[in-house]
Image (cartoon, rainbow over all chains, first blue to last red; front, side, top):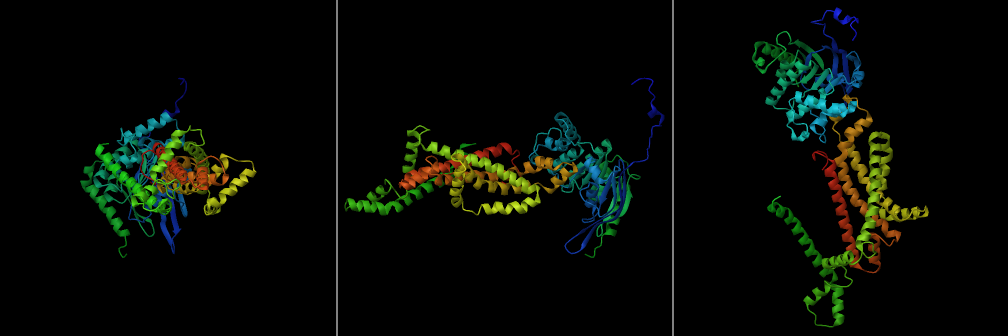
Length: 280
Length: 294
């Protein structure tokens, strides 16, 4: 670069704390669908704004619409009314631009592909050259602690390892937004603790924005910067709890014994109780 | 594998084969006894049961030939003449195998194309599938001579009419299996392709097609056996001089039951070989060896 060239960028003071950019904006979202005899209100007037770098957990009992909400953000469901923007675009535009990686409840790996080729799948669809596909797959597998398993087939791996492969696959094309639908729901508690720890480290090191659906209060409090408590019939938001103030960003499993952690968990539980009608 | 393991595997097979042989000999004695009794009576009285059994097992034109008669006929046919000779059964097997494989190839193309169309377009499912099913309710023995006559009029003779009849029998299981296979992909994996904004063609190539392979190979095993039946049936009305079907026909004209049974054994061996070949191809092409229809 020629020396005479002015560098206007340096004139702007380096923003240490820039105003957090909104990644996902949900406004008055309603989704109803017609069941056999009556309409089902899967989501009713849901509004939520998610900033860059947030780790948002959606928690609530079955049927509260937490998965549906995330599927709307991913353009896998169409809302009845309301507005959703992802990176300032409609969910469909965002999907077509591959703005997010999605981790499903089940690993959803292709049994005929090796672990490495599973992670390479989105890159293959994007048309990346083979050498780059391979290199990125190796990097991502190393990030989730699965270096050395490239040539294995999915059924040769444990459930927890399979779900880590599916996280590596979602990260492979470097999306800024990671959507996770109860990724550890089917795993035992020890594996789940371990993966929670890995996930929080991964989130700190990659600075992704995460939306995480879970049934587990401890998991939600441990991972999140904000917890969204939802309630069924109709699916709506009851409470949004900020964990960032009371808990450090960098967390270890010990934090779960701290009074702050217990207080937040208690508030989540209260919210869930309030929204749950026990008459049925 | 240990010898003990081999014995464990081979023992049931050997017992079964032995049972079949015993039943076969018993059947030969029972079925051939009336004719043999007549012959012995004509020769004179005073024959024993042992004479009768010996006679039933060594008849020139038995109702049911014995396994050793069939084996001897196969041996002389296969070793006594060059492979290009019309008296060698291998030559006839080759002719039938050629027609069956050509028909099988055409059936795979037709069956997979139909299945792909049916899966990709709902209208094709409602318009095409009833015809596909109806086509299989027509007895192949009734329609085969017509196909031969019509194609003969159009100037097609030899391998093509036979291959078309073989194809007619074998595209059906391929279509049905492939439709099921192409739809077997897990809904989650289809959602996954959507999150990658993969197109229809990419989803087909990267997900639906590989997911269908276990189903396809199950169908292919049925289809390749059916193609042999189709080729043999097609050889009956053509009046051809070559092929296992022609051997069956000439055998029944001249009451040569041993010749019929030899041709039947060769047809069975041909089918077993072809099904085994499809199984080997499956092993090579379906990695992982888990999941799907099996």
